[in-house]
Image (cartoon, rainbow, N blue to C red):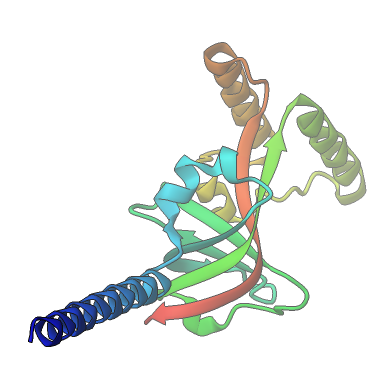
Length: 197
């Protein structure tokens, strides 16, 4: 009788152990599924805050598309918490262009984060181009895309004023951080998705 009772108890213990292992496996599967469903993007504010450490990496960022460039919708501007937190996304050849439905919608963009540096050499080259253009066009210059300027925090209206403004910002950054250049960022986009209109 003792053997039968021992066998019944052993069978009950094994059953409980198997049920417990199965429950743990189910919990792990549910956790893994939830992690896969969790958003893998960052918002514009977070991207800009850590951009210097993400250069060259593939990122997915989500923000409100405030503007598409008129020349083929190859550039989209995504805004974060306010209009001072903006990142430009440039469509790759494979991607084509951004759809007009992106405007005023929440859009996720995936691509490589690129740093654009403006330093004294860049500004001198720009000045040379302006001189050549002025000689060719008799002084007619372009002030630049208003959305691009806003994304960079620029307030100047002429190329010459923009250059002077950049020089001032470079001097301030060099005095503060020891870096004689300005960093701006954009995404070379490989895909996008309209999340919400």
